[in-house]
Image 1 (cartoon, helix red, strand yellow):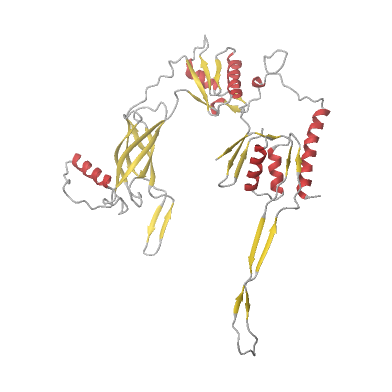
Image 2 (cartoon, one colour):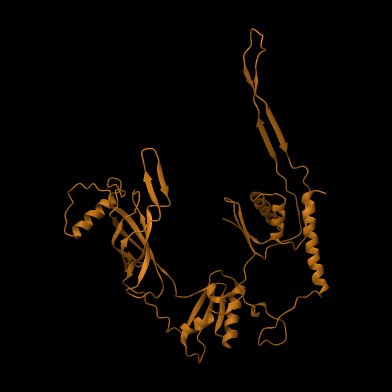
Length: 397
């Protein structure tokens, strides 16, 4: 029997054994009744066996980061800065900076490579107080070769509303370097980008008074109807009051129950420690460029017939040298081409039948055991999906 057929026969037997084992136990799985539940059917979203904290799968509305950006100059470079002829914005920035410091060089010809124009970016965490320090990233804009050894001058950092929220300054730490000689150049990592730890001081706070709010919303990072309902049920069971409502797959409304004196901040603190079992759509993620395949545990395939075979053509060139006889008076030494052509059309491969219920993980493991490469597996999965037998979404990156 063909090796391909033998492997999938084991899959079919394994699926049949699982079904037989379930039938031997009466055809039903044991069900745990949640605390406080009455007799009747147990709803899956009320099961107490949670695996993930709520705080790890939701974000609280209003508690968010804010992006800051600014334009500045890095000075003190060892000849690795911008060439002013190719970076006119750097020259204009130098002139404007020196004029603010009382130095007039507007009509002078500048020729320095120790300065580089950079973009400064930072993330302002929620509820950051005025005077706190945050980390910043510095990236070259012009044709600077390296920012190593440079110092960032005072740079205002603006928010989306064009208001200044922080001011950055300090020595730039660069993880990479670049060395150049007459015949070779060595570059490690990215020498034109660096960071300044605690390099910006927060000058303006973002007003948001969470403590005075009576209700908020929990935003799911991976929207799902079942997960949202499980979160609301877990919160209501804990509070013994219907304080949470699943509005849609992306958000759960949370209100402060009557008589709860601690406020919304303590309520969120208590709620985010509860555990639920997140649900997700069966999905297969494929990166065709690298051949990476990632799949969820709930992916299943229906009964389908499968045959895999590749057309392989191998051409081998073995040129031979032809020489005249040793005592002959004429003739030339020539190279005679010799070509060996082999064609493998995969005629020995058979069609295998996969029974319903075989998981995709088992399918891929068996294909790997047969020596089928990742790119062939991607084609097989897409073909099964086109046949309507793959019960999952395929997302191609």
